[in-house]
Length: 287
Figure 1: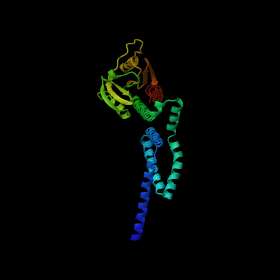
Figure 2: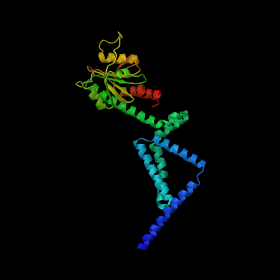
Figure 3: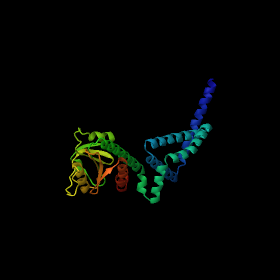
Figure 4: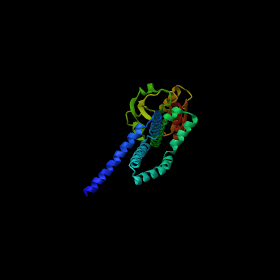
């Protein structure tokens, strides 16, 4: 038995020794062209990890890295069975990755086709930012739907390119993720900040209880209250999109570019925000 153990440990020791010898021999043969090749591959892997670096994508990339490490070790130690299994896993895995990340791959190819190199390098951050905006729109529309149903007055300012720092300073800084529950609580009629406006910038609730300038126009419908006049006034001094909910009727209105449009449904509001807020921000700030 001892002889078998000694033979087994000797075999493992020889394999490990061969592994280190192979690594030493490989490093001794590296030229400056190999160094450039390694740097290019490192940059490529960094870009790919950054592109797919979300929770799901990051976990997948880590899993691929672990499989590669096992494959390299098994091939070096001549573990034929393990090496064969990992080689087949990678053959199927390439197809699986193309299916999982098809939207990201399409975006990269489109960026390459348009020659937007900076856009390609920042694509991972842009995708994350865009996902935050889509999530914010969903939460805003969910909150607006509930506020409209309960006839709870609300005033929400969505920042675009005009700085709203002066408006933010009139309220209370919140600096929180855009969340439907938080928006509903801020406009609850017994909440201390419910009479002011909520300002949302970069897909985050920046401040609440903010004061907006009232329009001085004389051609405004007399049935419109202070919230609607404040929304129109805000649209006159900025390019923001302002959502208003009437506490008398629950009607959803939107003020933009000095114009107030009424009777939005939550679905129509979502379509408007995706077009006038999310995509507009994408064009202006490279989301």
